[in-house]
Image 1 (cartoon, rainbow over the protein chains, first blue to last red):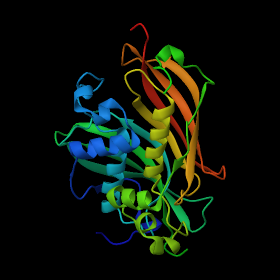
Image 2 (cartoon, chains in turn red, brown):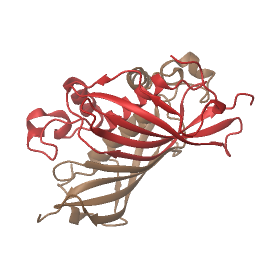
Image 3 (cartoon, chains in turn yellow, purple):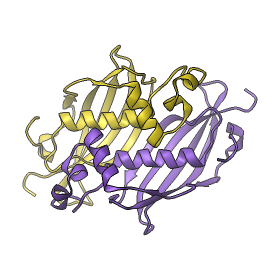
Image 4 (cartoon, rainbow over the protein chains, first blue to last red):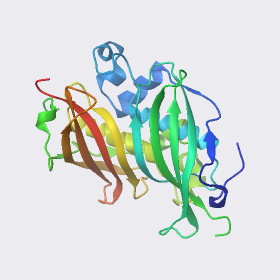
Length: 150
Length: 150
């Protein structure tokens, strides 16, 4: 894990790649789907075959959760990465069993927080690729980072 | 479960409430955190006490997943609710162990899909409340719904 980062350590154009690929199994797709997104396309291989996605596909919310995992592993914010909101998520390609996902994140903007003295807001874009370099998800999210000398 | 809905069944101003409250347990917060958001504030009651949130709090992505669950239960789109993107998520209040979450969704706009003949795009706002009626999350999401006579 990299060293703990404060607000002052982030700057526009800075890039963070995931430290590894995340292998998505059919078991995890179905388990997540049964808990949080119980639709045939996410929980039933046979039903999925006749669906919009032509086969079992991960809930977009599972993909978003995996992206959080990869982001937390690769960006070590002092005190934890506190979400300050999502500006956009687009799911651009189905995530299938045995896909291997990786992320590339870029810092877009940094600004002091108006509402939270002692914190800044870091705005970032994350692009999520599978093992064939298809883009499966894009997002723009903001998080808080503490000022070094707050 | 209500009957299956097509694009033509949705209209701006239409409202859908969750059919129940979803009880969030410490076990689920920690289990989700360990898998997808392994930060002390989401996985360790003791560490959480000294954190930004002053106590164990759910990952925002767990809250988002629970909201998907409640939405799928209360809005029955023919063929499944296919996400067409998120425009906004804001986490406005921590979600704690034993919170009971419910959702109120409102359709904001409906339009034919340019890229997907046979489908329309339904734009919706969802507000998520805990048992004290604190707003814990707000989101604007789009999903696809098939045309009745595609």
